[in-house]
Image 1: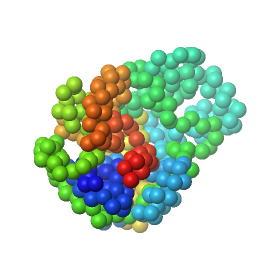
Image 2: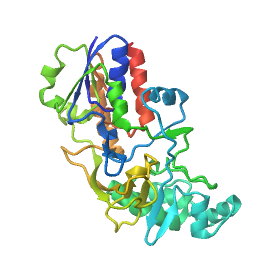
Image 3: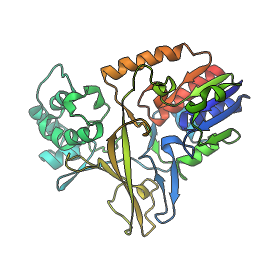
Length: 365
């Protein structure tokens, strides 16, 4: 087959690699002026580290198959995501674990912590929203410190306007384990994520700076299959309406100190602080040698057409609208495949993206 792949992010790049290796001819088109999508990284010599240009990306998976696959294209360091939370004048361990509960309540054992949480919680057998769920699981004090303000900034909505599912993926532990993820494998690629993408695309024709939607008919002609990883509603010219996303704005600063905050990620959970977190990039690379350090303040923003789509807002109206677009997409199955975060209007982690791309290629091969 001749395959046109729209988008040089992780999904499109894995597809390009697998299909090219399988004997098909692939062409990759990318709207931005670089490959890699939102996992694009670049080396910053002054800080001697790789900048996560579109926000922090930590690779994690429990799948040995996916872990072995991605390590074909890069070596990984032993970075573990241990987030800290800044609230008022205090720094807390996060996600909520036994040390967090010691910091706030003075409890020292899992049994003491369990009893204290039980006393703090507001019983609710059927929480109707994120706020009610949090109050029933962690109680009002922890909710105010860790969840309420951060969520308002991140989603542009109060937690009582969001479904409980938004928060359920966040761990709550009665041990001193402060690893953000529960997965077996975790790390950051040595040399950055862009190097992985470049190796995946090696041997495939790639063009950047191409707006596929502006001339789709001409670009699609001559190809047996199109793998489209852009926004599904944009592909159909928003004929049923616009799916909702949250976007991000980044403010980068090179600071003339060796270490700015002592950690890769510090979340700021007060609603009065305009950013949600500060990233210090050299900690991702486990390197503190340079005398300067690069930090990024991350500001969630309302999304509008032309902005980068980061987080789909998965509420009932958007779910219903996506289903209408999905029905239209299904009519094109023989010619166009919609994949990835934007093509499927899903929040996927990197290992899930790789797994989905490999599954598609297995069918095609």
